[in-house]
Length: 259
Length: 114
Image (cartoon, rainbow over all chains, first blue to last red; front, side, top):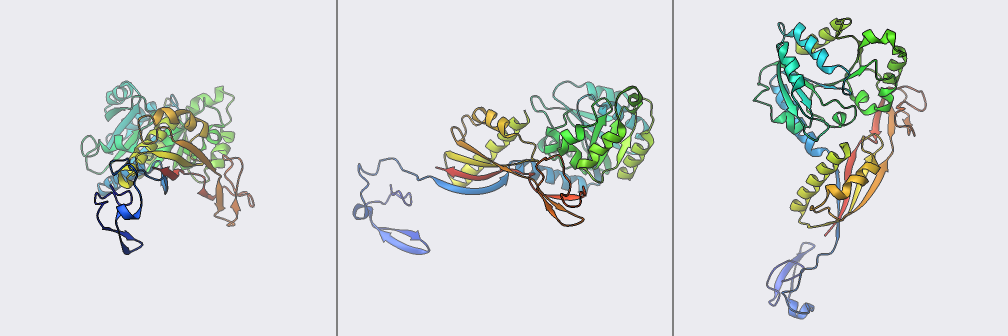
């Protein structure tokens, strides 16, 4: 076999294209293949400039999701927070208040179990549980699988409750309209500075468990200062899903998105 | 955990490149890791050998190139290069209304293949 072109005409005269010119040669005279043509093809190492984002594949699927949502008039919120900061309780209250006036559907992600879906179903939510197994976040393909099935092609508000985690979910774009970051008063004021990726990308930041704040050494002004260090403009909402205090601005925000 | 899924995505991507560009083995992989990418170099190095096993990347030399943050102020247009990647404000006028120009990406820069 010819090492330059891979052809098997090595003993006869044949052509290669070199720099746009046809170059004719025979291998027998041109150079020595030693040991005959059955010998292994030696491929020289070469360099390839790639410049491709590792998340390019996820982002491409997410962009398709986004187009699908857009063409069907679906607004999508991607709720992200640490585990236990109150995403599910907030959604229970949200569904209770909004179910009659807007069509809200929920995809809820956890590594294992269906507890969240059961809780949300109990208050009348249209919800589907996504289990990620060993993965610590939802990715765009998990959402893609639901389009046209559970997520019907009609105008609505889709809320994606991501896996409880402040780090990874922020890196995986799902095609959402907006990321919503939740931070509870029990988590410490400096979390936005320590986990800046999520708080930088959030379109709105919700401070939860505000009913506990008076009982804690937790300074809401300091917390908001940390949020502003990484995000100059996202509205910051303070609420307690348990008492209902501050829930109205959150519902108004959702009504605005669903409209 | 996070880095493991990033490296798995990386393996899929390089396998695709191998099919498209006809190579069987990667000798060296240069990765650009932005200071704001959320990917930790030591974690990538830790999970790389295991995550690349039985792929075209098995045994490849891994070179990580850190990309520092570059900010452009929307107010005064000054460029800043903060050393603390959580302090994202303009070094000249202190405004937090800044555009991140570099340092967010985690990408495959170059491959040496065979």
